[in-house]
Length: 241
Image (spheres, one colour):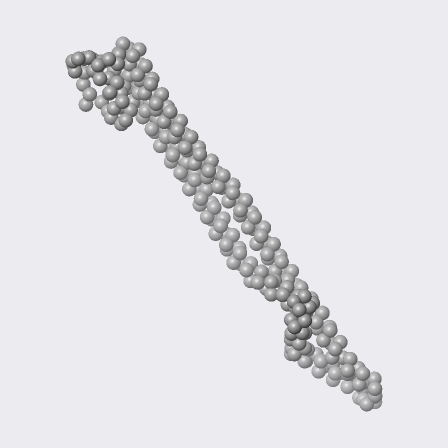
């Protein structure tokens, strides 16, 4: 407790204390508001990242299928070298699809020749010889087209993933800006509150002096203005009456 203060001293201290208290309350409120805004922005970023990862997981099989089919198309076209092309063509030639269609086609040629009495004719032998290569060429083209459909599917999935990534990045950038603005606003408000507190101290000292007080230290401790400047400094640092 501080004793021996005049009415002027008490008034000055009261003005200073009220201003400091108001400044502290304002600084605390600004800090809490900034923290709440920052946390809200961070939660938004986390949720958007979560949804983007979920979308990537959903589209991942289509992306993988598109990548594989593109490689297979390149193999058939010879882009990946002669060996890769030969392996791709031999894969079609040894497939059950080629086997079944080849046998069915040759049987149809033979049956037609038998029905017309030309089973041993040269035309029949030529048709049989030409059928398998033509069928293989047809299946190569068909397979390339099938792969093209999967490649397009993968391309679309990749584009969707990329667009979602861009949108997520843009949205997160906006939230980061909000977060930065909230933190900067809180810091500025805290600085303003501190300045207001200092102004309140100065105003309290001015009120004290305006009401007849002075900052001299009398020889007796019982003087009305005893160590008033020290009292104000104590108050500004968290002391009380």
